[in-house]
Image (cartoon, one colour):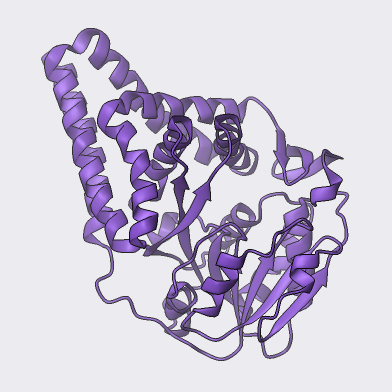
Length: 375
């Protein structure tokens, strides 16, 4: 029993050290750059409501840019944008690749000769005013080839949404080394030269996941992928619990269909944690439970500090809802995380953006429309 307790203490201590490492390495001097020739690429659905909050946040950015909005067909809200420098690109409907990827490739073909820096964002984020300037800083200074932030889910006040937020926060606050960084398409930037080196339009063809395709290609080319740790970008999580769980499973389906090895590593780590909690609650006794809860409360405390430092107060209050699960039932978060990992590996079908997609090795082999009106 003593060796099992020691192993459990080591495992839990490592998780606390990982979150503390993220907190200690938050940049104190959040430097920005504002070069000329920045293009921001935004893909939206045809039923997009115009994203008043997003547009206002983009208008408040500290770095100048031109906006390229890619739609499938006619999007009245996009056509009505009064942004200073905006271009609308109608991509049409895909037949052998993800609709987002299809729109993104159309946006890439709409780049002009003066577009030297590319910034990719999602329509459902709540970016800080420093987003573009912070993403550009490592690029302009020659410190990276691809730069990325990461999502911070802001769940509505529903327990299941907060649980999915807690699962995602385990990923958001992982220590990140440049050699193991995977970019997030919701807040990512690269130089035009990097995009051309990767042959971005070609490697995205036939794919469903934009960011994993780019990240894996970057690894193969030995590019410098750099995370900006203070860019945990708010992303609202609304709706019902089922939709939230489908979102979580979809992320792991992307992983297992693009990089099975990465999925196995993640599943092994979470499997060890899940088995450890099962042992602690069933056979480990009070000492094991105290160790588990002590580590969970420590992680929650550090994560609360991280959140307070990187997002706005209103966003921090929403994100903190996920921490309640770490305080009350951390084992549920661990088991839920493993469950979505396993569920993600049990199917090659992904429902996303009005389509069902079937994949093989990251490529779309079949697709069926579910709701064409919302493409």
